[in-house]
Image (cartoon, rainbow, N blue to C red; front, side, top):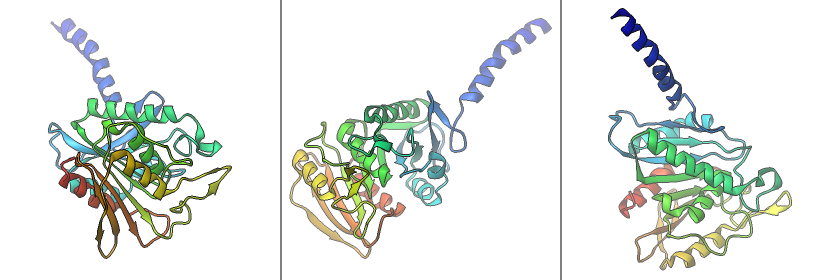
Length: 272
C-alpha cells in the first residue's frame, strides 16, 4: 500500500508542477511560443462565467508589464467587469505595413500574434469569444486599425486612439464590417490628424482612414454629439455597425475614460 501511494505521488507530481508552471495572469507571463501577454480578470469574477475582454496594445517602446500596471486602465476594466489583456510587440513597436524600417518587420506575424493571444486566452480563461474588443494608443492605435481592417470578424469592436495606418491608407479592408470608434487630440503633433513624415515614410491621414472606412462600410451621414470633453461625429450603417470619430482638446495622449465611453456605445449598439 505504501509503495502504491509513493508511486501515485511520483506520477502526479510532474502534472502538478506542470500545472503551476502553466499558470499565468496579471503578475506572470502567459507564454505563447517566445511571445507573451498578461491578463487580469475583474475583481469578484467567479472563474466560470464567460465575460467580455479588452485587449490593449501599448505605444512605442511600451511593454505589456507597463500596460498591466496602469491603474486607470485596470480600474476601467474592473468597472466594466471585463478581462484585461496586455499585449507586447515583438520589438520596440508593432510591425506594420509601410511603417519605418525600425518597426516594419513582418506585419503578417503581428496579426498572427494577436490570433494566438485570442485563441490562448479563450482556452485558458472564461472569456466570451464574441465579446472581445481591441484598443491601443499611438502605435498601438495603429495596430488597432490594422486589426480592424484585417481581423474584423474576430472582435466585437475596435477603439484606436491617437494612431492610424501608415501611408498610404488601404483602399479597402476585409469583411465583415467592424465597429470602430477613434479618439484623437486636436493638437496632436506626434501623430497629427493629417499625418507627418517619419524616417523615410509617412503617417497616414486620420480623415482619409475614416473616409475609406465610411465608404467600405456604407456608413450613413454623421450625427454630431458634443460634451464638455469630446466632439464626436458618429455614423451607423444598415447592419448596426458604428463608425465614430471623437476629438478632444489635447496633444498626443490617450484618456482611459474614453474606453468606457466607447464601450458603452458598443454595448448600446448590441455589439457587447
